Length: 372
Image (cartoon, rainbow, N blue to C red; front, top):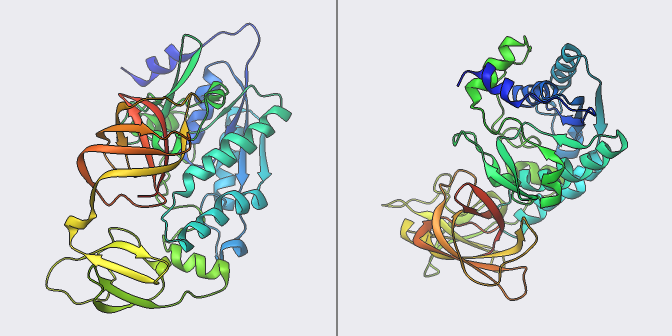
């Protein structure tokens, strides 16, 4: 279907003008999200969340989502649309809710996904409170996901474009938050979004999208943590699964499950990090076969409807962002906060700290943090 027809089908005529606060990063996705909401008849206000300063994470240059260039791009789009634009400062809340939990997780040998915490605590918590002060009924982001209302219930669904689907990082949302949120890009492909931006003359239509975490632009988490904590982490032994010493590691925060490169250990075959032992301060290496697990335990179990099922559920599950969901049986624990996931086939490199997210066809049921 032509893009113009897709937009036309979404256009609404409301007796009372609905209002929305648009979270704008300066990228093409959130810019087109703003345009599409305006086309739907919403009175929109654009905003950028200022999340951190350079010295918080030891950066010399601020060249990611909080950069001056990004705010200029977001402001330019808002000016073109003829709508207000604001910058909101959330540096301390971001430090407390996103940076600190990430550092704590790495220090206990987990590998977290900070985008999930950022979405839950910042975009769909702090920002919604700001939306209320502006009298906005919805907050809007450029995420590739869908929200569907059926029989008075609200469901989070995967995006139409599987290559861009971001439902995995949104599993912590509640049904009430979904009721107050819009994801206008959910039915579009990235190419269609860029086409819309080009036709509207947005200056960021061809802007390259970032693949990195905003406050770790070079992807080196360990270096960021050392700067943030202003300390180094003790070296220790690299051992095989029988306890034989193979070498020395440079601090457990530098390693994650499934890692093969940068180990500094000579071997006549491919070996991988299969476990981190914070008690003995050891990195355990083994063959790839030891990375596969059929059962995964999760904590902080979250069900989007808030109604945790009592019995087993057949579903599909993803154990990291780019993992293709696999058939599994979900068994909620009796206390509600934990669950057990049993895959039909063993899965590679289930990693403590990452999230297991559960799907029923294209509907996101919920998820939890992997503990193994």
